[in-house]
Figure 1 (cartoon, rainbow, N blue to C red):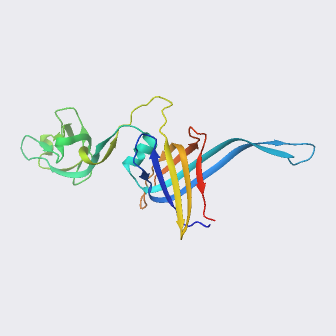
Figure 2 (cartoon, one colour):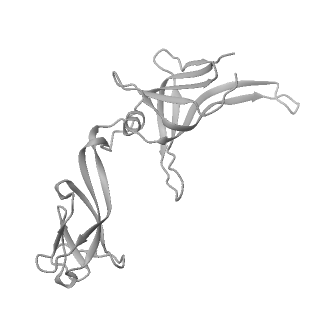
Figure 3 (cartoon, rainbow, N blue to C red):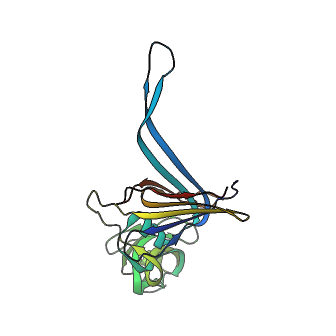
Length: 242
């Protein structure tokens, strides 16, 4: 059969009763079989016999739709909880004309991390201090920003992070012991008309996850993985329509 298009790729974590994860907006998938070889030579230039040695089976997938569940189950295999860490870029705040010279951000109740303050009119940055800020400085505590009398009445733009308990997935990236290896089953299938090609790989582990952004282009994460035999000494199955 011939093949056209990227096909479909799924990963299923080896953890008990795991949810199948589809690689969304799949761009391309590559599978590579490679072997080391040993050549036997006589007096002539070319080998009289060649034998295979160690084999290696690897895969690579590029996909545009990023899923927290997929990334955690297939790559990190760590503790995932519902929720999000969200960013606010350039929230407008007006420093009061009279004391106290404080600005409380909209999401102060679940404030996470300060990312800086700039003058709204010029874009020049403020300098962060612990307390008692002078002109051009600020202090922050739990989403409450304190400025000096020298900046009274001036609009500012504030960047920060805050959290929510719903809407996505948060993954705790803990320092795991060497040898900890999340594994998953990979299924690739491609349809061309009525014909179907399928590759089922019983045990894989992801070896690399790349995420690159680019001006005026889409981010296309890329995941590399290695395929190994399972407890039955089987890589998996491959099926082609003739």
